Length: 232
Image (tube, helix red, strand yellow):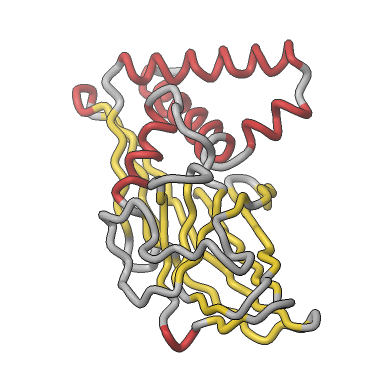
């Protein structure tokens, strides 16, 4: 294997191991299901790759595309090498009443600047943050601002407080994080976000669905929110 191929293979390993395993909750999933000795070997081998790429001067950039997806680029400018991958984040929101879907909407999420830095930390450094699995709701009409670190007027009542979703792998480089909010009072939502912490200003991505897609919920409703991610 040539030096160039080794570098590209290392990037592929990094991408598969971190974007899928660390981007959300796979680390915790593996910590339960994988024997300690295998987990230790996997982690040591993974961090060896990460550290070698860092030592070589790895650069990570994230750019949004018109379709709402993101291109993630790894590069070694000094050697003229780079590796690219496509990251997509979407959100599906379903409102149930008496067990029947009465509203369903699906839109692309927008990464915040904090979210881009979080991805860089996950990919290029020893991750110091939790997986992005906490979902928050708001009824603010504000357009998403990449400078946000928290949803404006985030809801903390009526069973709609920020909550951890459940991670599920949906295939190679694809995953969902889903939470079903049990609504306990009348409220409305149309702005949503995903965080990498249960409290505080740690907004990774957000989505404004607009007044036309507002969910007017009442006690007894279920608001099911799914964040869908993929890397290709």
